Length: 167
Image (tube, rainbow, N blue to C red; front, side, top):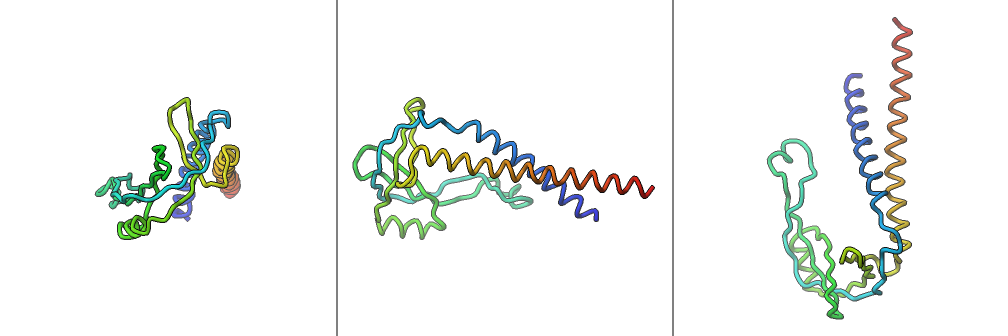
């Protein structure tokens, strides 16, 4: 029974963190007006490079290795407008295979003029559909988090009441 309590508490903490991050990300989503559609561009892979990212595992592995290496395949637009895009490869050899094949990939470019940035999305998406997808994802995460927190406290109250009646 004690293990169940600790597992439930761990999930409660995870739900609180997840809910906080989802809520924060919901408020950080830009409006549709802040994007300028630059159209669909063709991108070709040109290199694969190792990149250090934060190690998200737990326990001793994370303490001993705070970062880990992933391989990114870098693409640039074939129009010469200077747009770039990158995608994670499973392994270095997989990334190199992608670069060697040199297959074109279509991506829609959305510019964010106020911040002098741009993002690339799937070619069939629009700024509106991208924002809707982001909101949907974060609402689901927030909803799951809130649901778990509510269930946790309902069960905690029920167990506390039944425990106090036994005394």
